[in-house]
Amino acid sequence: DSGVTQTPKHLITATGQRVTLRCSPRSGDLSVYWYQQSLDQGLQFLIHYYNGEERAKGNILERFSAQQFPDLHSELNLSSLELGDSALYFCASRGAGANYGYTFGSGTRLTVV
Amino acid sequence: EDQVTQSPEALRLQEGESSSLNCSYTVSGLRGLFWYRQDPGKGPEFLFTLYSAGEEKEKERLKATLTKKESFLHITAPKPEDSATYLCAVQANYGQNFVFGPGTRLSVLP
Image (cartoon, rainbow over all chains, first blue to last red; front, side, top):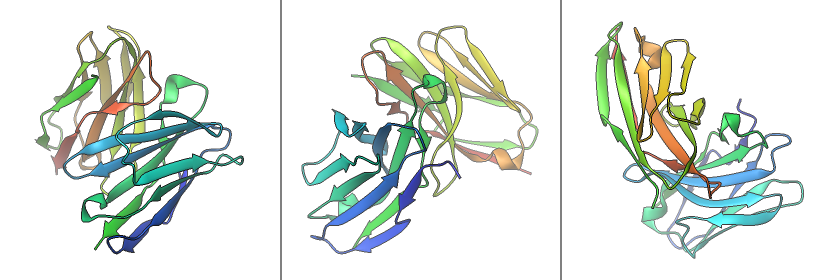
């Protein structure tokens, strides 16, 4: 157990629908990062939050949004889903010390049918 | 734009057959280079951080090295349980997020 909790582990939904993925960072970590991993794209950075504030955006589609709450958990909202959104979505957290890089959760596997 | 490439894409080794994985990077000022191991369907697991050229880190059968343009992950006398995808990532001085390479898929046969 890495200490980063992601729910749900699996999600199957239809095109056009909206889903919410949840992440709880390791205790004490203020930063949360979201990444998408598909077979042909590798790990792609989506968005970074630090202590409730958005810090950086990567290749995140306008149909996707995220937020980090006062208790530091984060949610990634995906709407108007398309078949191509099927992927593994990972959340990672990071503490103040840079030595250990990110700590990843076990991911949410999203399948859009 | 920061870029990371890894080679080979896939590598099959016999148990005990040592080899190296390569990570080449282009970044405007390197803050850190990170190696991760990822098993199928699981999240990447942190292995090493390297900060400056010439630095080396070791853990069991793995040794990571860093130059100004690339990093190597040396695997000595691998075992089947070392089979996984090995990911390399860089963090630039100006940014917080990591840029990941596509990974090397390692298979160690008994």
